[in-house]
Image (cartoon, rainbow, N blue to C red; front, side):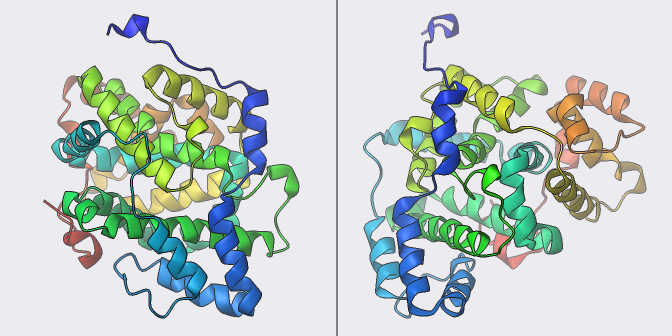
Length: 345
C-alpha cells in the first residue's frame, strides 16, 4: 500500500482527556490489596522485588501478586507473530543506534511532558540514581528482545512485574501528599501511550532525522512489536496506533496537550545529561549528548527542557546527516554492567 493511501484515526483533545485521569485498574487493584494488608510496609518490599528484573521466584509474594502475574501469560488478540518477530529482528539489526536514540531522543521526549514528568520527579529515583535507572530501562528493553524468553514465558512475567511496578509507584505517589490532581492521574493512560510511542514511533523518527532508510514494512513491524508490549503493559488498545499515520497524529495530539517547560522536566534532563556525559572519556565529545538531544528534539522542545546549546552543534548536525555511522560513536558498547551484559549480542 502506498503511504499516501494510508488512513487512520485522529486523537483530538476531547478524546485524550479521559485518559489523563485513568491508570491501570487491574494492576492498581493488586497494589490496593497488598496495601490493605500492611500499607507502606507491604508495598515497599514488593517494589524491591518488582525492580529486580531477574527474580522470577514468586512464591514469597502475596496471592494477589502471584495470581496477577500468572494471569499475564498470553499475547493479546491483535498479536501478529510474523510482524512481532520482524520487529525484534529490526531491533537487533540496529540495536546500537536504537540505544543511542533511546538515551538522547526517547527519554528526553518523555520528560517534555510536564505533567507526566512530575511522577519521576516526586519518586526521585531517576534524578538520584540516574545511571541505575538507565541500566534498568536497558535491561528491560534488551530483555523483551530475547526471543527465547517469549517462548519460555519469562517476558510475560517480566512485563507483568513492570506493570505492577507502575501501579506501586502510582500508589506511593498518590499517598505522598505531593501529587496535584491538576496534573491528572500518576502514570495515566495518556502518559503510558506517550512512553510507548517514545520506544517505537520516536525511535523511527530518529532514523528519519538521520536520513537512514527504513522500509514501510520495518516501520510497521517495529510499531506492532511495541503495540503488543504496550497492551501487555496495560495501555488501552484505543491508544495504540495501528500505522505510522496514527502514530504521528497521536504524538501530535499528546505533545500539544502536555509539552511545556517544567522544573521536573528540566531537572530530569539535567540528570540524564550528566549520567551520559560521565560515560564519555574524550573531552572533545563531552558536549555530544546535548548536541544530539537538540538535533533530535528540535530547538523548541530542547528549550523547554533547558538543554544547553552545544558550541559544536552545527558541525554535529552536518556530520550526522552525511555520515550515518556517526551515532555509533555514542551508542552503547558491550557494557561492563552484569545486568546488561547477559543480553548483549
